Image: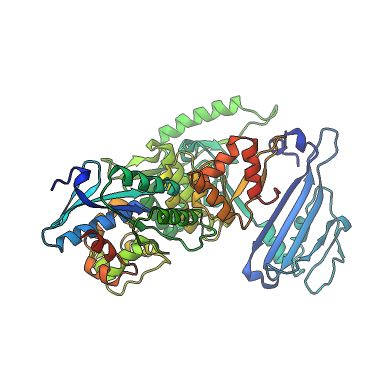
Length: 214
Length: 385
């Protein structure tokens, strides 16, 4: 089966994520899932989409990273657009963002709520990995792997309220000029995490992604 | 009251007075820990009127809510020395252009004296240069009256302030470096160094100094005083993209502004700055960095409040809704600022979503579209103050 033509895909996964670290994290997670599944492989297309080829067929993965300047209201148009262009294979939407506590006071949070409502009207299956947490909270589930990667003693404490601050504090205990960096620069760290531990112990059901793909 | 550069030039404000008010908390003052202070004055006028303080208010409280007690009746020339004294009964003599706190601060025996001193010791830092070149300047000829060092938060010699930070507060300097390396992943190190001027450089500068002093005079006799620094300070940045450390003067204006903003935020608490005002914070800075920059600065401020002015929807999107003030357009050229109604966040955000915009974009769209849109914007705002 060709993985280059959209018509050959058996299904599609549309990831709407808050930042580029989420994309790196789920990319590495899915690569790990492939390594755990006989006959599965993952490749990246020239347009930066990903394809996972399994015994059942090819699955198309698309990412929409909001970043600092992305507009949540436009994410629903993106979903509509890819569903119409890439039809007829069925789509599942994966949502990964920090709900950031108080929806009444945080402008982004309110927009995400509206986006969720609009998604409901499209009738697409949704894997909801949104929580009042950073993606770094998910990474810190494998705290032993994190300390090992950084060469830290087991007793080194985490400081900060949320994952990103905690991770930054860990990095700065080694060298203040070597802080934690988000996005592509976090890939090496993420690649060294134990996804088996994360999948088992994560506060959010990331194994729903694996079940949907494979 | 006589500062011409501050006087309003808009006819609508021709007879308006200047008013200032601040509220802050100093827990160590216990019964008097919540402090409100304000004054109003009339600007000096050509006809000799004005130039007088028309109102002054001192209110203290042990908690933020509840009834605040007044400790000054300026119009009667009376003050209240302590909480146990029920009313403003003590007399004081004030000139029309004299603030009561300038008199009360000298009366050590009164119980409210520490609160009065706290008011007088309030410091503000203003950071507003749009062109960051001037604040990194290492030209060693300067006006003698120029403030120097970290505690002055002088605008025009950031390297010298950073050098003092490095030597006097190494932990804070490390914090500064850590934030810079966090915001710019390509930065390996950032350092500030001092260099002694060579004798021949001093001689050359001495000639320039004499020439400038000869050309610049204040009055018939008085020359503008210049001095030659013994040392100059430079910031060097080592980046993984470069083959050697480079002076910050060779970096982009946006990078210089980030260095300046982070440095000021880290230094503010050491310098006792209660409030830091930053104008057009987004100038020259990539939008993708804004959220991380604001988070880092907020953490570094360590209790110092910050007022930002901005024309960036991305900045608005990063800030808590309740902290936003909008400059409401008016027909007479006078800007008034108002907050959004406490229960308006959801409605405004929904309207923005329906227009396919972020809330920040929608606010600026309403401000720039037309009168109907201005009315819509005002419907989300509390009454302008």
